[in-house]
Length: 125
Image (tube, rainbow, N blue to C red; front, side, top):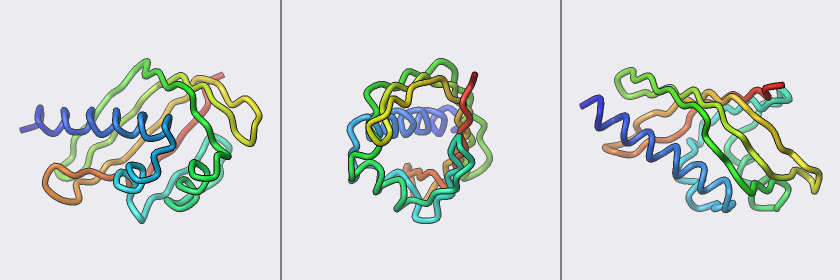
């Protein structure tokens, strides 16, 4: 069973990256919990609507995401993902490139359906 859940999380992570790169608001809406708490690399705490607005307005544009490392820990109906990623993109038309460490907490909201309920990012210098 753990292998099946781990595969679901890997797939959800891949979908999240694609949704972010394509600013796919519909898919992001499905993958992010309405209770999302996201602490970005600047220490700002954002919710789901903040994230959707940044993508929808074009304020945040991501051209590539490359996963360097990924570790998944399973706890009943929750999965914790630690990922090291290279991101290229822009924020408010200024370059926003770098290597980041993300921690995401996924919660199973129904059979085979997972949503991010918490996330934290740090820039690696």
